[in-house]
Length: 391
Ligand SMILES: [Zn+2]
Image (cartoon, rainbow, N blue to C red; front, side, top):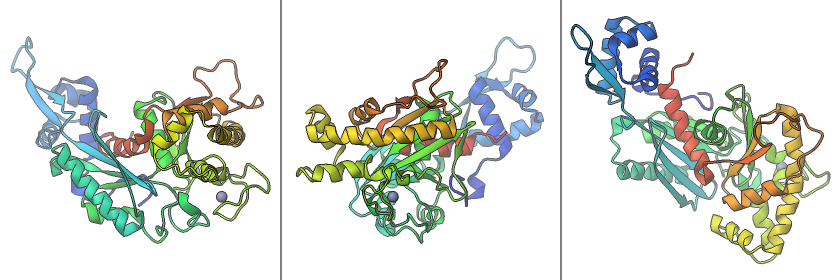
């Protein structure tokens, strides 16, 4: 199962024609069967079967009859935004974020909890419990659940970065996450890299609405990159593209857990900030701890911001010249005030393809969805894959 693809339980996956009808009604409601048949290129009989099935699944609602039309009045259908839900879960080395999204893309539940043990068996128990709590809280029926999108930091599979320090999940290299979670949750599961999910979240409901080419710099425990190019998330051959934390920004610099010296992650990540502040006897644990240091204008933390900004500035120039993005978004597991301080510190390189006079959006912007952005992306991707027809 490739990263990002939803699978399993074929009988629960809607057919292509069901998706076509659902998408049409969503955009054109209320709509009658004859209209749907004509517009979707389906027979009236096929549309009757499909609308009956979608009504039974709770995804469409019959809403009376159109008046003023001669002959037998035809039933009209509306899209039912609360007919189905998706759950998004972000697994971080130290926290679990759970969200529930309805078919209209509204977030109807979100919960963040610290995670003591992120090893596979313990993390699985925590996720199963978090999903069960979410279902209870929103009174979610099992047959309304489209699937669970689980978002986690890479790398996936065994690579030379697999054991690269505190920023990766411990002991996951032998786990195939898709079947691991699907067996335990007994519903369709989608697995995605945190930075890619965050990028998708911003495109569906955030600052990247309407953008087809952009980058998302994701501050998790480490630092990752999500890239959307020509409207598609870029994943690489093994789902591991975007490991920018291990791009070297300082020759002979800090020793990184990956074995190299001078990786970006050792300067400009949540982990790097924690290491930096430890020298001054401050243990940064929660987002509020970070926000307080900004609020108090702590000089040691300001020094970290300045150094992180220097290293990020180099990488921004590289990303711009590599991808020619419409913008680069900063977001993830840091409070808005810290993200804003980092953005303020970036010296945008003059020599860049992105330095052009006809820009419509700033070269760097802060994400809209905040610290739940990746979990929201996980839920949004499930909804997108199960109800949107592939062209
Ligand atoms: Zn490294």
